[in-house]
Image (cartoon, rainbow, N blue to C red; front, side, top):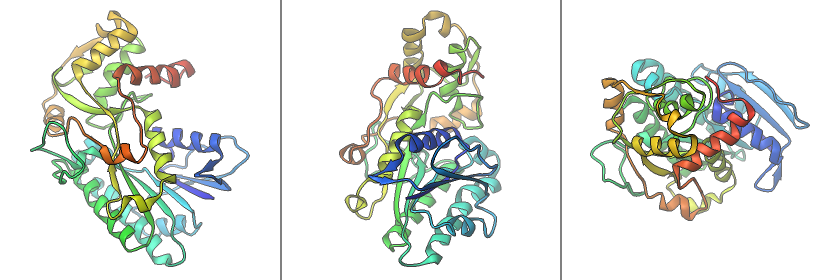
Length: 327
């Protein structure tokens, strides 16, 4: 099996590649080669499996065709401009998040039968916006209130249509906010959810731009990789004409996050959180969903954490224990 990972230089992309190489197979099919693509060519990890790394911007004409020319059997499309940046730069967000994705889908379509790869696409719970019920079911309509959410919603519709037409086997997974993210903050409006845990654990002050009552939906990076691998191996016939799924996660308020941090790391960590309200971020976050049922995904075998303490422990095990969590 040949695998293409687009967005392989990102945090989730790197962890996905490591998991693929460790397993050596997907759904019982042995890996014969992996192509890693990102806006800058990703680093190639050591492996007995053939690995190629390329710099690729899907929004540029001809780039998607070049990647699909390799005829990958399995494609992970993780590349995107994150929420805060997509909101700040309207044109860039649509060019990368929408145009790049459509170029990829079209490149696959134009190859034609019998080529029909599995394509796993990372969407977002940002496709939903107010007005919303307290707990969102699987039949909730898309009502995005950000450009990023709108771009992801359009891509979900395209994924469903191209899958329905038989051009590829698509699986769209709406990721919860992934926490705790290692390394330096990115431009995502949700970045503080990780920052208020990551920075105190490193002995660094963290800025909290919203109220403690803000409630949101979370999963760890480890869970996100598990979602991707499960989506790559699932029987797509079980999805019917609805290939986009909200992933399981856990709902927690900022206050509950902070309480979990204190349980795991002690009161000295909590004292490093400084409250400094940011109205722009607060407005964006206020329109986001807070909790989901995710019954379809759970019934299909997708699994996430159930306690925020566990999300913090995953970070301690996977990042701080390896020296990867400093900012």
